[in-house]
Amino acid sequence: MIKYLYVGVFVLLLSALGFTSCKKYSDNPPYFEPYDSSLVAKDRRVLVIAIDGLQSDAFKTAATPNYTALMENGKYAWDAKSDIISKDASAWKTLMSGVTYSTHNISDSNFSTAQGSAGDHDDNGSTTQSNYPSFYYFILRSRIFNASTAFLSSWGKMVSSVANESKTKAVLNNDAAVKDSAIGILKNGNTKVVVVNFNGPAKLAVDPSSAANFSSGSAEYVASLKTVDGYIGEIMNTLKARPLYNSSEDWLVVITGTHGGVNKTYGGSSDGETLVPTLYYNKAFKKQEFTSAGSFSSIKVQSNTITASLNDPDDEYMPKTGQFSVQFKVRGSLPSYAHVFSKWNGAWASGIGGWSIFTSGSNWGLSIKSGTSGERRIQESAPNKNISDNDWHTLTFVFYDSASKRWVKRFTDGVRIPDGTNRDITGFGGGTIVSQGTPFTIAVQKDSYGGANFNIADIKVFKTALTDQEITSSLCTDYKATQFNNLIGFWPCNDGLGNIMTNKINTNKNFTLTGPFKWEITSNYPCTFTPNPPAGKTTLFLRNVDVSAQIFYWLQLPVPSTWSLEGNIWLTPFESEFIKI
Image 1 (cartoon, rainbow, N blue to C red):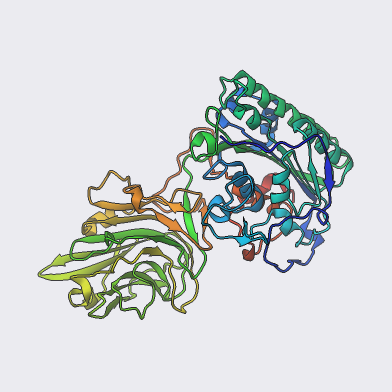
Image 2: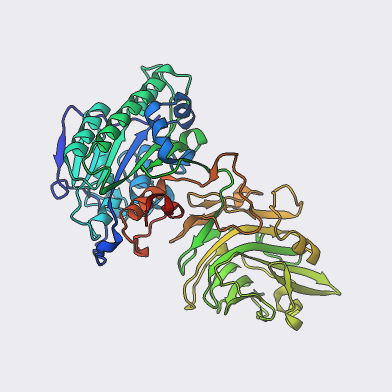
């Protein structure tokens, strides 16, 4: 059970300079982009209301009137994702920093990193979070660095840990006091970004002295949800009463849960704990319900270092002497001689055996090394298609035996590449490729051949030699893990969050993601994928890690890649609703 830190009856209004913390961030240089007044049609502002313990099914059943009214001009979902775990500190760090738990590793209520994870250390030797500050930190380094910002909550430790860069911070006694403070700021202030935290529903549900629990059948819990909904109504009435609300001010309002719960507890990874309702409101938005059903995600590789690895000491994913096939989908910009997908140690000069799919100009090649008999590099281009055109392409290679020899064949989008006499790999480790247990990796780069910037998805490994007909006819088939007896690895890459890419065949062989990767939710689908949302809904996977990205987008602040945010901006396709030309 998660326990909250209770704060006494007091209110602290603290300046950003006067409220210190032991957190250590590297000294990133300020980022001041040139100001162009023509880019700012209106005075863009943001209000975020985040509610701890907002169990999605119960909140939907409660049909709270103020939230329901906002849906008429809202983009909303009942199955948005808070993060891969539902602990308070983790959820708030994700919401405020724009990176997920798998990156920031904040897990407990002291806001220290998970044991054994990377992090800085303070003067007392305690582990503190690495350089993943809140979006307030970046606002202070933007062209609106003078903008007034505020953060309101009754959890003092959280305020100092995830919002220390906010210019105004209020630590209050309870949700009612938080509501009153928010109303005061919105009524009298000129604040650009306001974040409000209500935590009453979570406190009530986990209280052992209360009969309440995280379900629609708990009258006490539902009553607490309706109380918070009443606070939302009062805050919105105050916001809409601002003199400039219907003229120059243009507000984006985000209302979301930081976690749900099951029975009387939370902190785990179940849907009941991690799925939350989320609503984005603007007076010009058209009503639209989103759902994660039918969403497509992929891993975006953004570095020269290992992005995903899988320990494979038994060499299950090495062809050795048997029949073997590998297939996956890729999209992006690929520099020459970068390892895209491989089963060796990643250095061209290494004597360790294995195989690697690498880029060759705008095409791709396959390198095979036995570790003893040299390397066979297969990279004939014609009629190899350009795979660096930012469209999805399916790459397939097959090891097979014929006429007492060992051969390889390659396909791009189901079309076989001739490859000439190089297809004979009998004397180049083709008979006994052994990698000495080296990891199965995506985007490992140990040589000086530039960086990788691509998406990868729908990875399959077969312990059989697929025929030409099987490859061509199944090019746009949505594979299921049970369809093929010889499918020994299947990573659809539809996880969407976290640092694990799940193997649907064998969860003991999941990829672990490291380095500057990101999950990308995209509407650019490979042909194997057809979104099929329920009637009346639009496929879009909303996540709390995306909140920061939407804030920067709404405030028209460019996001340099050096900020390393993991969230996606999804509001852009709806600009015709709220940008009037």
